[in-house]
Image (tube, rainbow, N blue to C red; front, side):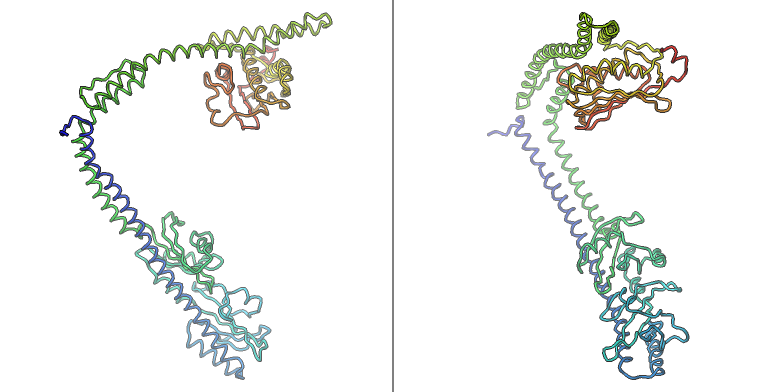
Length: 591
């Protein structure tokens, strides 16, 4: 088979030579992800090891001091030493172990017997109830850590002494934990990584960051710290790691491990920017290298694929023109390969689309005529039914004069409504300005309720009205606004099942007058609420979809607003708001 570059398959083969772009991209993505994952794992493991070693050193430091006091207790009980000897032992002990500021021996009743301190002991008399609230270390009760007057950490160790297995008093020692602070200060990871210790109640005990040591003096609580919560949730001695945003808005990598015997949590935190600095640099270099290689391949692919892309661009422009409605667009592709065949197929398709467009226009005109007829029937059916019903009442001989007068008034009103509907239909494209006169909303609402109540009874729906006390005067068009309310009430009745209700309420809200039409019907889905006031949009099976659109235009011409709220299954409410007219002149004109 001869090598013919005119065929699309041949040119496509040249493009396949550039397929190395995909493997290169895949390699780059995999390499970057592997680098990130490996770096995170390596840094996290290293920080976890630091936290575990720090926790073990702190535990050993505290337990060692507890054991020292325990050894002193063994020297004092069951030895028969007199008070002078006991006093000398305590003073020598404090001189030898300077972490202990004071050691005092108490009787069972809490009175001090001997103390290493000259004068009154500072340590409070221990009791079983208070000792039980601390941490137990193999028989030694450790109180919660506090900061003394010198702003140094201090804790009290207490041992209950026995003589012949009977309570014989208490040995209490006040321990200076300043050395523990020094241990925490020496734990550094990078330039900005520090360690901190949190007590079981969330109180900060020690912090390696010099700028945050004041938090220890203030007994700052870290009960809501992300690492404290994660350590408690782990319910184990294995360290946990987490990335989080600290109180300063800095992104940190934190690891935490618990000291079960003390209930403390040791946290080592380091800014992620510093922790992953090496990986970020390597990642940046890798991205630059891949980008350069990718750019080179793109340039080569462009040079080889230019003749391949030109016919595609021609077809693209023609496709856009057809999409814009220019169905007379044709393409001229001189090549004799598959692109030439595609150009011929496109021209055939464009010609066929022009024929189909004419057919669609005919069908749309027929469908629009059907919708227009259905909409006219929908809007005129109720007024015509009212005219017919009241006409039949007039023909009955048993109807009194008052009823005949009411029927005549209703017939005149509905005939006027029909005339206004025909005027609105004629002016759909170019709305005719409404006429404004002072009118009482309460009167209009009462008329709508009176005319729509029979329609509601026919559907098993209660149509109710609530009017405000006094007059609610606005500048409006009585007939136009009546049509808006009638349209809203009709829609509400049709959307409400038997046994439901439709309520029309008129109220005053400051300098505004509000009319609310609410129903207990099926409601309107949220995704359709934003379009219900558009032309030819309807939620019903029939109708033009002009009712709400015309209603919105009428209300806006009256300087009013219309809003809708709906919940599927619970009902819909439309709220009409107009500027109020409180003056008596307008009220008299309306009457």
